[in-house]
Image (cartoon, rainbow, N blue to C red; front, side):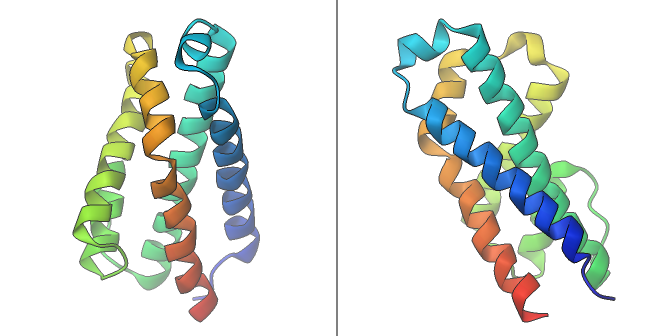
Amino acid sequence: MKYNQDKINKLCYELKKSLANLHRLSRLEKKAFISDPDKTGSAKYNFIIAIEAAIDLCNHIIANKMYRTPEDYADTFRVMQEVGVFTEKFTDSLVQMAKFRNRLVHIYWDIDEEMLHTFMQNDLMDLEQVIIQLGKIFNSD
């Protein structure tokens, strides 16, 4: 089965666009970011889109290669580790991202904006790395 190139392109575009928005927001001083609900709301939305796109890209590979079906969003990244795409350390970071996504979607009223700012400072590289790692698979098959 071939990969759906249109789907891959759209997901990569959305992931990169959301990462660019998050990088822009990450340059704001913490106090200015936290005190502006438009900025925090934008960051939350862009995190959801970026993490969803990363999960969807992984699921596209999982379905194409007929790997085991993930039990939940976090397990999607574990499947990618099991088949040798991601390292254990990288997978642990991505699992935390999936849990953060679930929190943003399901417990949206209880998000610590300081933690959100910290994630923007420290964790965007993990999502960039997803594009690099999965790009190797999409380009080799």
